[in-house]
Image 1: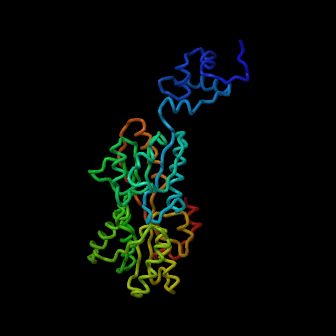
Image 2 (image 1 turned 90 degrees about the horizontal axis):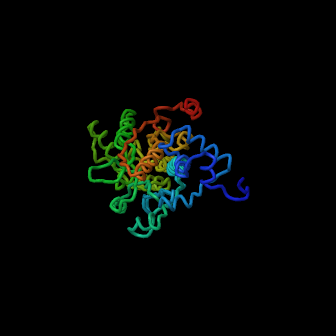
Image 3 (image 1 turned 120 degrees about the vertical axis):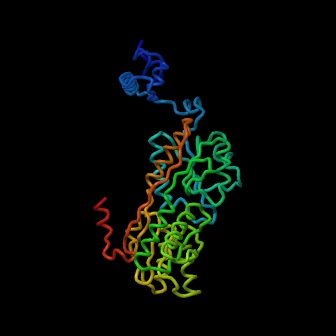
Length: 354
């Protein structure tokens, strides 16, 4: 007898029309490779023609999965990075897009404020199937505990070390620090200061690259490092305070992020100094506004898009009970006008080349 059009379509209805078992229908609708491609396509076509909709809630309950991934910004309350930070917007956007391709949702948390129990907050009651953390943090104890609890965990952080069990995806921060500093040295700059909080593993790597480049040039590797958070405001205030206390005692700045660099440039300009004539500036990240800043910002480019995608791919491996290996992405120096090496730079030229 024909099925009442007002009744919901079930797998048994599709199985009857396709002449297969319900288990075959289930596998075909979930793209299980055990079902040959021709059969999968035929069953999926029948399901589409009948307007069949998978009951996601029931399936998730059966699989004991939420199909949600927690994403956490882990730079601490004083770190200065929030959801609205340009770097974070790019990274979270890349993560969300790739999660959507896997039919996963994103559960965002700026940071965990309830002490050390990340496991209960993020994974309790199956709120999420895994955790992606942006920023290794000054203290990675909570991350190690998530790993100890057996939670799928992928971290955007510093370079992986032998004693770390969780999966890290990162840029080659020491190489990026070298690239920035070597470039400034080639421009004849010798009094280069570093702006950034080296307690964060990512920033420490950039600082080590900076020190290595100075050492190879025979310069003092204890050259000045000023602790600042990730924000433009912090970059501005640190340079404003330094100029007030000492005057212009440096000829270049390597900032651990573009936001810090932009704040530093504004502080110099507010005191009548010219960038790059008086002080050359190089940032780190290559956020979208960098080419359009005044002057356009020379920076070390991280492949933020690829980083976000990789973290999701590794998370899917972990959820599938596979191993996920750490991965380090190369960095690239992008020369614009703030360092003095490309005074005729025009943003539109760069975008036409992409």
